[in-house]
Amino acid sequence: MRAAESPLSGGSRANSFNIKSMKRIYLILSAAIGLAFQAAGEGLSLERITPEALSKGAKTLSNRISATAPADATWEEAGTGMWKEALLDKLIPAGAVGSAWEVSLEQAKEYPGYYRALPYRDGTPMAEMLGQADNENYVYINATNPERVYIEQFFAFGHILVADLVPENGWKSDSKYGTLRDGCITFPSKSFAYATYDAGQYDYCNIKGYFQIALPGSELKDYLFEVDMPACDDNGEMTVSVTAGEDIAKVKMISSPGYFASSANNDRAVATQGAEFDLAKGYMVYAPGDNAPTGLYSTIAVALSADNAIVGSRCVYSHLGERDNSDWAPAGTARMNEAILTTVYETATPQILTCEAEQSVSQPGRYRLKNPYAGHTFAQSYDDFVINHEHDHYLYINATDPAKVYIEASPLGINSEGEAMIYSQAGLYVDRGQSATAAQNGLFGRLAEEDGETIITMPDGSLMFAEKEYDNGEYHFQIGQDFIVVISPGQGAVEEIDATGEAYAPAEYFNLQGIRVANPRAGELVIERRGSKVTKTIIK
Image (cartoon, rainbow, N blue to C red; front, side, top):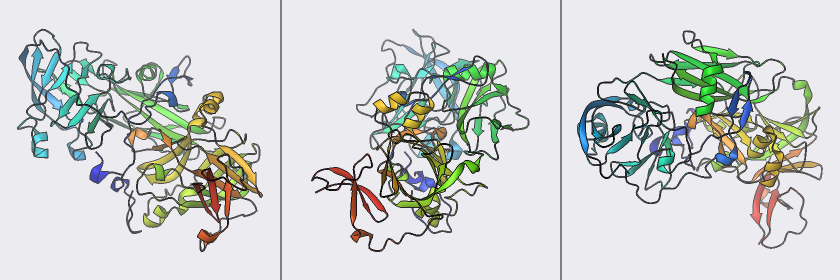
């Protein structure tokens, strides 16, 4: 899995922040799903990402699953093809991903288009690289329908379960099929997942969509396709850069406010109505305009072959920041219980972050926390943990309705595995115009005023977290535990908190809605505040 190259650890300040040395708590397998979204193009409808279709935790590995190729098949030699490796892309050196070699293919006599191969057998580069060959576990390729090619689940080397995420293998997605064109089979990015018995859960593979199979007499295509976009705008502009392989004839893209993703329907819409990217230039500047909504923007890009077939797709995310700082007034000092990284990385320790808080003049109750992670302990250990842009980074909290608090999509200004971003499920529902659904699912937070202080809480697991270089920058759900922000007015700048004796400071108790509890009962779950330290606890 992510083993030696996986996610949070310490180090001296001279070190760079390398998230790959940290161990990630969750193994992610999520899905992008559908809700109609009207973008700038006339009649264009895109599918947006919503919480309902997200897998609630990764699909768990239980019993060993064998290939289900037809039992009555007679296998005949079909010739020599080519295998371009990306199924084990997280288990092999990065430089080996996309390497190709010859494989012997067999075809089922009774089922033309049904193939099998041993891609990791003796003599293959993979066997030499790993010092181990797999001469027993066939890969079965069903290409009987050129538009819906898939691979049966199989065990590489007898213990690494590789699954094509299609309904035939027990998955719900209908957009993960490969396609067969001119004798070459290509698969979408993140169309496969793998698992081992030790981990017990799936993680994505074929991350960049390099995996291909060329049938006998055919050639592999260079469909390398990468898209990059900063998480923050630069003075109202967002720059998209593209790297495209030689066999990509053109690239089209659409940028629009909101959270949506690459899918079969979206890709077709972008291919027909998107703006063409200048491949010779290599980048495109998107300027939404002065009246454009601020917040999260999604850019879907599709790569097209010479015959206008879609051969690759990517979705990247950025944020258009607030341009009118005159609308914000000092609200005091905020103390935030860091409840995000601690639910993502095993070695991220709980801590209180202190920063300046501001409140909107035109929308009282809408707050933003200024550079909240600048004081995180990782900032003291790693020079590049805090991103040094020429602007501040804000975490936006909308508490205009104290009973329906949510976090707006916000870049955090830190580099974990790429630029990190935060959002809340309630915020996503509000942006979709479905506040009632968020309320029904208990996803809103609460705001309470106690002794002149503002206390904001969010339900556990109601936040969403994204990192630009992890899983294509998509948000992942069920993040956050003990998220609490306390805003103390009357302080124009952040002051150092003297933690000496905090353990002996008098305790104050609040219920999960932020309302003070004078005499909590034994067994009651409450929020306890001692000085600057805020935790959840069960009264004994």
